[in-house]
Structures are given as C-alpha cells and as structure tokens.
Length: 205
Image (cartoon, rainbow, N blue to C red; front, side, top):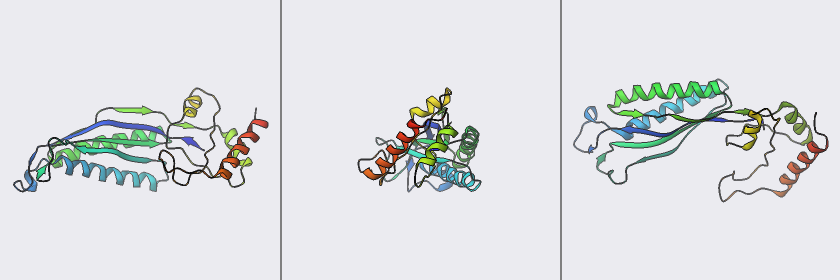
C-alpha cells in the first residue's frame, strides 16, 4: 500500500430554502433546497474529474443526503436538505483546494438558486505515506505485487505521522470490505502472510 488518504469532511452541511407547493410556484420564484444541493454535488463531480484528469489522487462522496421526513412531501418544493461531503486524497494541498472550491461553489449556487448553503466546518484527518523501504521489501516478496492508496483510515497513519516506519499489506476481497458479503480467498491470505513473515525475518534497518 502506497499511503493512507487523509480526509476533509463536511459533516453537517445544510441547504436552507423555502417550502412551497410543487404545482403553484414557477422556477424563477422557487427556493428549492434539493435542486441547489444536487447542483452543488454535480459541480463537485466535475471538480473530481478535473483533478483526476491531472493525475491527482482524489475521491469525493456524499454519503448522506436527506430532506426532513416530517415536512417533505411528493407535492412540495423542499425547504431544507442536510448532507455530508467527504473529500479524501493523499495530498493535503489537493484536499485544501477541493474544500476551497466547494465553499466557493456553494456561495455561487446558493445565489443562483435563491437559497442559503452552510457547509459548516470540516473534520480533518491528515494523509500518511507508507515507509518506502518497507514498501520496496514487501513488493519484492510478492509474486504479483500491486500498490494502491487506502481510502479508509488506519492506525498505521497515526504511527507514520509520529515518525514510526509503517506499511500495510492488503489482501484482495471479492466484494470489498465493510459489507457482510466480503469474501477472502485463503490462498490470497496465505500469500499476504508469507510476505509479512518474510519482512519480519529480514527487516530493513
């Protein structure tokens, strides 16, 4: 694994508009929180594509997006949304640039849609690069090595940030982690275990 992505997360983002009847208000007079939120997320998708095209490591996720179940309805223009925007990258500079773009875009889109978008503050975790010597040794111990960044947080990031040489071995999983269908092949597990043992038996000093 090459490194562990850091995170800038807008945990408590809100878009405040105005509830109204869906059939009674023409578009120029609406304060549609859903439409504005979707416009912002669509814009951030294009920001992601731009950074990706430049070869930068970046992932963006809106893991939560909802209206107020007590007030929304099929014939209502939504007056409020709440959502989360999760920004992850191996580079602090990339994350900072995307955060700045999100704030600027929120202001522009809020004005265009006649709403108020409050992204709030971000909760932050820094990225961490894994130790080059350990990475090189592990790559030499695997038959078909493949390096990639980790998008999830790990304790190894904390160790790396305080100067402890750190590395991780990922074992492939048919359905990915964090879901009940994850399934690891025991031959793959054995390959990872042999690599770990080989590293420990010949640890670089």
